[in-house]
Length: 96
Image (cartoon, rainbow, N blue to C red; front, side, top):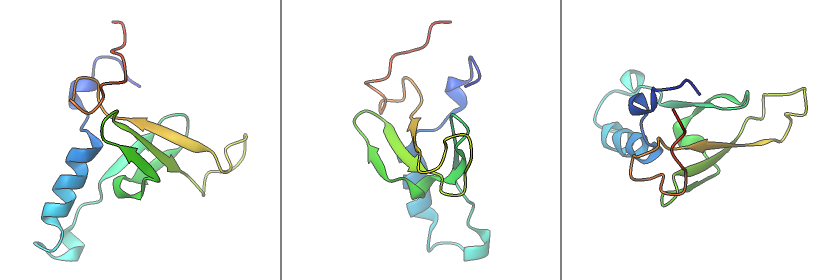
């Protein structure tokens, strides 16, 4: 992760709430794709395609089936909500 940009990130729950409010209210081709960039080379995944999401800790899990090679097949990637977002109580703030 890039240092000192935590305030620019959005919690997954906020993304899901925005998507739910927009869906059905605008034409499908105008609907934006909300994505998360998985750390560790997991690539970009649709935010709503998580396998699990714990809103208490802010930790969600994803798989990236198209990512292969270098022991990445069937790997589970963890994505964390931003520190201080209210959803990430179990994740400690990085030292600056």
